Length: 64
Ligand SMILES: [Zn+2]
Image (cartoon, rainbow, N blue to C red; front, side):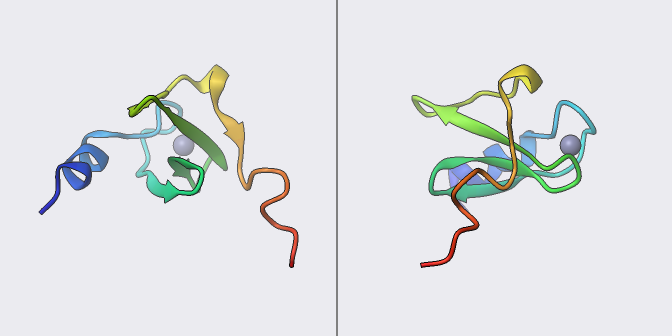
């Protein structure tokens, strides 16, 4: 049981209220339904839809 796990339980996508997946690199939370990435800024998740980035992030799909 980690503190981070309980934090994820508290978090929900502000757009669809769906479950989020934690990403380690870069650190943030992903809503698979909305395909949005909410970055963690200074240890605090930025859950603003306006600040969310499209998921997958550019460059992450490239092979090699
Ligand atoms: Zn969502």
